[in-house]
Image (spheres, rainbow, N blue to C red):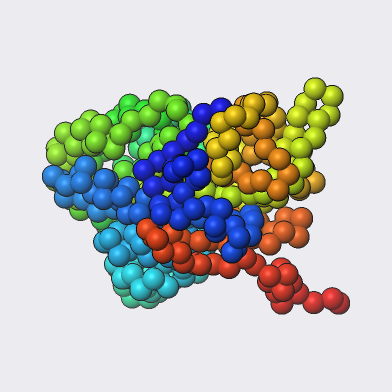
Length: 420
Ligand SMILES: *Cc1c(COP(=O)(O)O)cnc(C)c1O
């Protein structure tokens, strides 16, 4: 088998380390399943992004749905990031870091009245509207509050991001955004919306996008709309590109942030407004691992299974997106043979797997596996299915170990529940 390593999560003397901390030492203290994050990976990714776009007027809004651990959000806030929030619950979490609401974007295809009201009351930087009805509602709510709400329209540019269909959002058959011509007519009706100020134009075409072309195509399409609006006398102050930049989960082809910047900056330079980015996965995915104990090896007919103590409720991506996560032992045993096996969890679902027909070094019961690239859409998509407690989240910063969230207790699972 091959090993997947990053600058901050790699093997030293055949032992997997997260920064300067040996993974197996963390298990002794915290047990498994266990999420571990490298703080300096997050910092390094953020700085790379910042650096790549340093020549243009821009702002990063971390998409916290990829990893909403408070310490993780706060790491980005401390670096100057804004936050893209998708719900009232995310807004609540974001504000816990002490970030100014003027650095928060309120996103969401189905915002409730209460979410819109709250966004206006907290004075978020802008509310992203995804339908004409929503624009009308925002206007009514803002009128009732006697204020003007800053609004951007999320435009669906109808480009194929060529990613997994479940994480493609920029095609007109997807539920997201407003098509260009409808958006144009809403912007044109701006005088009817007395309590809205249109501040920007927005897109987000999908996630884990592996090539730059769809971005270039979408930015070009939206730029046309931007210029049309300018001719109409509407000067927008920001152009929001969304997130979606793909990362490497294995050795698949990808692009660097520098290449992305090189291809897009010329397009941005034509616009006379601030460029906003909402990266999620790019900042967090490869900063996390999910560590799990091997419980059993078994064979049904020709098929081998490695049964581990983590499950789909801890990390859902393999089963819902057929996503690849590299899986490797905490200790490299170069003398051992490789086997081909499914790596599965204890949950009563056929979909409870992390890998199928995966080539992996033979591991024995009581040894440990690291499920790599689990820093994005891992813990945030976790659940208590099968009565399972969510794992702890540990943050490593060089030699230092922080418990950002402890393992849930069984009492958490019963929270406020009564027998009638
Ligand atoms: C999910 C999401 C993002 C982040 O996507 P990544 O693929 O993690 O970069 C950004 N903006 C919006 C509107 C989103 O829904």
